[in-house]
Image 1 (cartoon, rainbow, N blue to C red):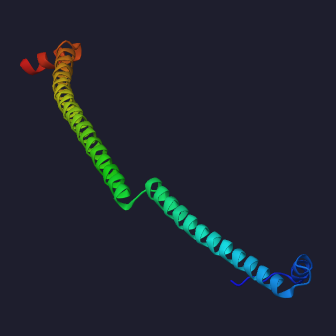
Image 2: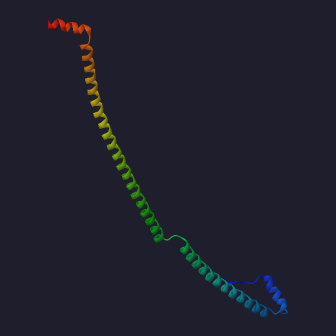
Image 3: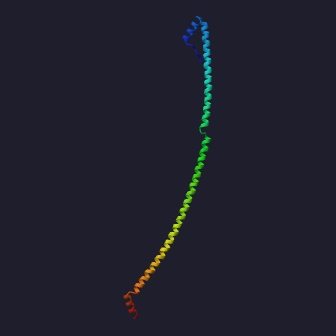
Length: 152
């Protein structure tokens, strides 16, 4: 970018060089060249610093942010943990189901035994009722008279 000095600076330079316009222009041109060189160096430094900062930020971000491989490794690790926990839960559930089945079989056996006992008790009750009816009938005076009449 070309840099030119303001008109007021040219006027001041002419006065400084005792109205010698050629010397003032040469000096002004030299100042302009120096300013351009300084500006160019500043731009180069800024560009270099910008590139260095950009690279530094990129490396920092690259180190700090999760990479695909890191994320994939973490996801795979979580999947393995979930699978392990699911397997453990399945084993626990199977164990609980097995225990419940055992308890159900025990209850079925107990129910079967109770039914058998009930049948035996019912049969015994029928026999006892039969004996009671037989005894009451046998010792009933009216029945005894009926038997006497039948036996004669």
